[in-house]
Image 1 (cartoon, rainbow, N blue to C red):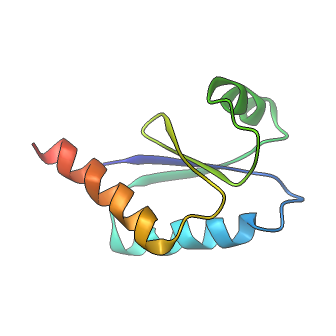
Image 2: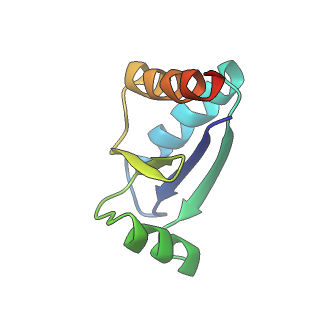
Length: 88
């Protein structure tokens, strides 16, 4: 099961769209999901570790995968690739 972490900021205008996208995809796909506020110590640590300079930022399985709001198609493709890799 892929592990998706969304880094967001409370003042980010695009972040609600990213949150909505990942929550919708959880209905269709099985993956672990959490949202981390970049202004918290945990968020700062994640941002520093992955060199995140803008939010929303999506980290899938420990790898920075998207900066900004991904298209639904791109997000689904990334999840499908992770699931296929685990199945083999």
